[in-house]
Image (tube, rainbow, N blue to C red; front, side):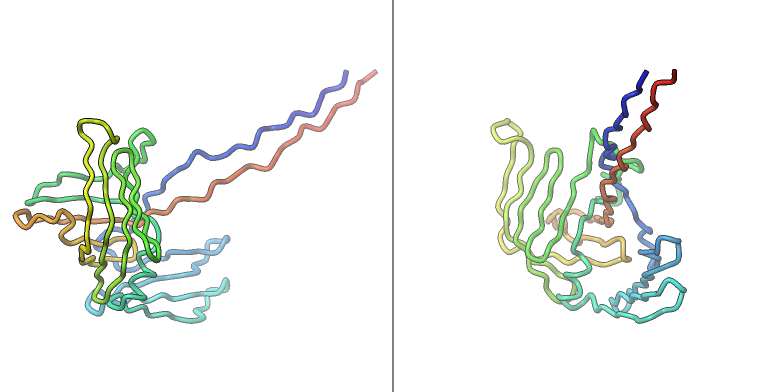
Length: 217
């Protein structure tokens, strides 16, 4: 009897969203490591100066150089924001009205805010937005575009144009910032915190074969 080689189908990890936040009070952390576990990039945020300090290390543990980004300058602020973020918590008039789940729920994914060089795109189960964006000095952004909520044609569908809206984002750490006047309601006292989102790459297991077994007479 000959056993045919069995081919295992490539196993693709289901998209896992890792909510990786060092917390609003923390101002320093290791953000990258070598494969063996040694630190590669260490960052420290100086809130008084609005400066993000990056320390780069070789695999032997020696610091090789330091970068200091002034987040009050538009170019450095743009580099800091680029990537994906989600809302961590929203407090309105001292009442928490939203707090992200501690565990990712694929049936109720969060709205993802993707900052790029010229765009802010928001995607979620009900909410989406497409803004042209300019990064300004003093940690400000200027946005122009449109947001929508719900499915077009439904009775609850809403959509609105936003023209030259300027907002201030207060950096709290490498992993978090506070979006000032997010709700654009002067009658409400708000605190809206966003956290950096790291999406692990999709990993495929190598194909595995079972060695054929020849007939044994």
